[in-house]
Every structure is written in C-alpha cells, then in structure tokens.
Length: 170
Image (cartoon, rainbow, N blue to C red; front, side, top):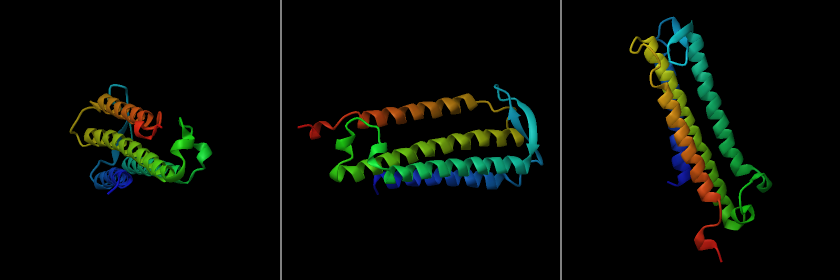
C-alpha cells in the first residue's frame, strides 16, 4: 500500500465517520436543537433537528467534494500550474508521476484533518443537545489542534519541495 492509498483510506474513513455520525444521531436528537453558540460555547439559538442534520451532511459532502476534486486536479493539472522551487526537476521524467501522487496524497491528508475538525465540532453540538454537556467546552482546543496539524502539514510540504533531495544534486 503506497502513501496515496493510505491517504485515500484516511480521507475516506474520516468522511464515513462524519456521515455515520450524522445518520446515527438524526433520529435521537430532540426536534429542536441548540445550533447557535457564543464564543464560550453557550447555546444562543436553535433550529429544527432536520435542518441541523442537513447542514452537517452538507458540510461533510462539500468538504469531501472539495478535497477529492483538489486531490484529483493535482494529478491532472498542467505542469505550469505548479508553483514550486525547481519545478522543472520535480515535474520531469519519472519524478513527475511520483510528485503528483505525493501532492495528491498530501491534499487528501489535509482533507482528512478538515473532516475530523467538522466531526468534532458537530459531536460537541450533539453532546449539548443530548444533555451530556452544558456548552461546547473544548472547541477552542479542537480548532487549535486543527491549526497545529495544518501548520505541520504546510511545513512538511515546504520541507519536501523546497529543493532537490541531496542525493539528486550533482
């Protein structure tokens, strides 16, 4: 199993997790659910359960489509669209396919962590509506973890493609 397959699996599992979550809770939540929260996570307003589930499904599907299309576009896009140091080296010969698949896998990993953030925030909302929590406590940590992972993702991308590997420099 190569890196792209692992990234595709992680992305698919994160999407499936979100979809299952929405469908599992779609019948057990009250008819009116708290859906608007202040910055401290305290409920401010409500909406119909069906509207919240529709919103959750829309976010999951939109994120999935966005990252799936972006991951596929990396594989099919013209070379001129790639703005990377030493593009002519990275996108030449046998390296081009490898570079494209690596970049596609990286896009799918970013999609997976984005899906997990959405899952976490929706789950916190469900906990409030099931009476298991009085607020969305901890949502700042979820966002901070996401931003940290996104920063690591960006750093790893930058380190990978900042220049040719030492073994390739002649």
